[in-house]
Length: 558
Image (cartoon, rainbow, N blue to C red; front, side, top):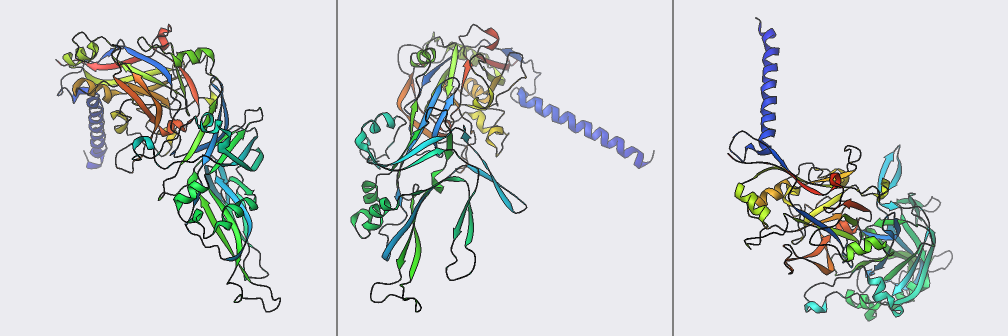
């Protein structure tokens, strides 16, 4: 047989061998690598105890957020949430020199929306990200009289000050902390239109002004007189001498929201691109030596811009989101205020923002030998269960949740005590730059229509359970929250998340002996940035098919 006739057959055999090896490798990953190549007899267990209940998280730390919000949002289940902003205004430089004979022409506030630019045929168009609702709102901008401290006096001034989501009902319940009204933006709705700015060409007489395209954002002119009195007239005075002096003198802007009885709108933004620009002119030199136009005799003037910012990484600063929520429906209020922490609840309530999350305790509270390890887990360790796969399946209660855009695509589970991700996050290779499609093996997206029991989230915790069985890891309770952005911060080399502190940590009695074993102290910052809510079936529901279970596929060694 000629070589050219044999070669295709050899390639086919080689391909088959590679395919079989690949299948064997995948199968080994499931468990045989743990048991040294012994034949697998995979079993399924859904009977391990899961206790889950929900709790209010508010007040939550809302300064130091990566993304801020402004506006109102109405959730079909939880009602309306209003989010306002207290923004600390910062000098761009201390001891500014505005020149001689200054004249303030205009003052412009600009807060860029989160948006994505697309260029086609040299035309740039923008698509807004994270804008919810389309009804107009009014935004009133006040001077704040409330001092935002750099450091917390309760820590001996060793820790930066934390500010919480209830500031509207605490500090700003005192009307003396709200200063004069500076400006009101009426009937505001975010627009995806770019902003075209014109800049005179200066000496290029007879030519059109330069054009600059700015990304969509909230851009308004503020009253000139206020900023002349507040800033320019203070040149050379102590108020502008240092960042600290200025923060005590000008204590920030308070953005108050009025939805005028509608559903309003809510938009998200990053303050590192926001600014207040003061456009002014000044004389070249002092009187007596000024440069004049030889034709008109007019004193020549220069144009300049001085910028106030809201973010300065070299200076301690605070910007705070203030939350006001509608009263919860009575049944939900009762469930999250006084949950059944020993037997779990019928329903699990999740709401982003300064909202509601759930606590999950695994393997029950029976501890006959008093070794602080549940007997169920002790038995698994004794029998040396080899964990092939472990999942928590959360079914959506579609009788309470309407679905659609109001329903979160992602939920997030983490170590409630140490505020760290589970080991399964590190091992998930389904990485993507798009948050909604990232880490979907560990943190499954909302699955619609693939299960006759309804929509569900599948949270894979295989490595977490394996570590509990084989590495004697502490059986910490887990926390579950809405989190639409599951992308971790990898700047340190290892995946990590920023967390926001709870003002009142949540006590957790892990083995239900009447003592506090653990405390939930923080939630991911991205969960505060997620406003959506949902309702899931808990472990104590009468609906057997949709009941929360720990699904374990395991192998017993021979």
